[in-house]
Image (cartoon, rainbow, N blue to C red; front, side, top):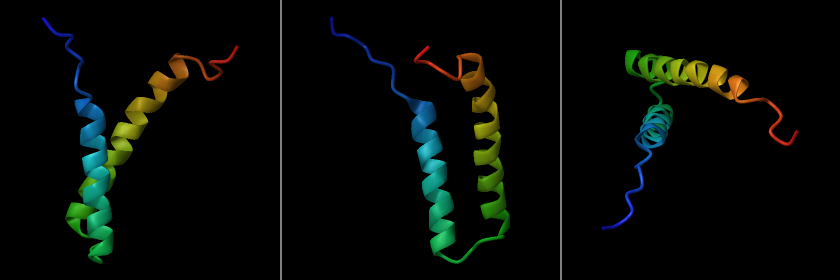
Length: 62
């Protein structure tokens, strides 16, 4: 049997959201409902990730 490596679906999804947001920016659609929805989702995910980073320790070298 082979070794199974988990696919980083969360990271791919985050990258895809950022790409979609950038495409809206490049198309001049800043402020549209779709832009606001993507921006809010990215902000929500960043806010959820921040407490996990703080809990793991802000200074990993100590």
